[in-house]
Image (cartoon, rainbow, N blue to C red; front, top):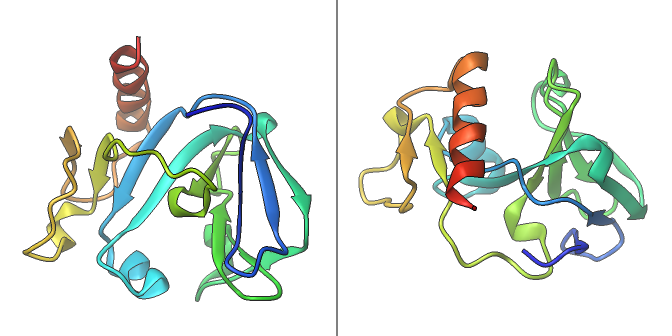
Length: 148
């Protein structure tokens, strides 16, 4: 991914910039992500929070439960990024919101037990549910090692 990476919502009013390489890339197959995206999964790229910034527009909370930290464009209501509660050190930007979407598959897929039967992401790691905190650390380390 070329840095700085830029991206934004569907209408273009909410824009962001990323100035560090990703910590991890992920596809989530949970029913919540399926329903929020209208697709079989959501794609996200975890970025250090200090290296993610909004450069234009207004974001606001969205989704059924605002405590999940999902942030949407207040104009077009596109789901653009998530500030996961309890993980203030990172931001999960929706991969498809990047102006130049990476060609490589996500490194990990989560909630694979809810994956639609015909979906294949090409992820190197697959978890049947949402991993525990210590498992995330191991996945971040494995992702970093894979990029050397």
